[in-house]
Length: 217
Image (cartoon, rainbow, N blue to C red; front, side):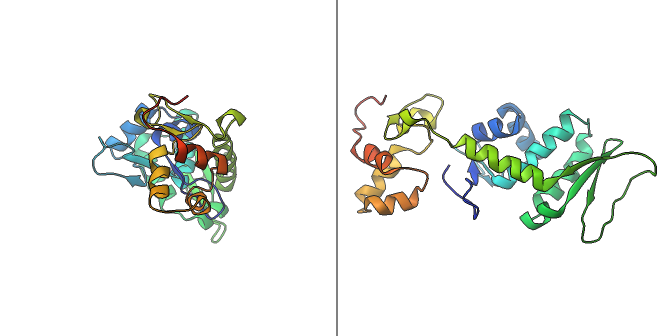
């Protein structure tokens, strides 16, 4: 996906990308979506459609937190439903100032604005999870995910696991047909690059000149 946040970080992810970034399987993500535990921010009502589950950057960060709470600290799914709602409702400013604490398999939110922490028993230790650290680590991994090899620059490829085997710009999920449609509509090379800021001039030229009747590399 090519949507980008104000920080220049890709902000929309397919379920395969979400799986790679969160450590959760596609099956698990689909199960959580189907049961209403965690639904992607950009979801098509028809889940059978292509790219019907698209996750935001904040979705990815939230899922990483939930994965840790589930696998490492055995927090109950019932309790995690409330945690998931709270995480998804917070804006980036709240994430930057909030720390989670886990005690006896329950999650406590602490906001420095009021300094309140509930469900903490005196004399017992609680695990702290600064959410800004989660955001920072997620940005780092998203940037690494988008790094392409030199061989991919200016090349077109097909894969039965990517975009239903349609020709795409190598190392991405951007369909050649989408770029061609801009060119056919009269967009200049510079204008197309504005629509796809992650692509190089060589990528755009390769896509525009690609013969869809031939087999990609």
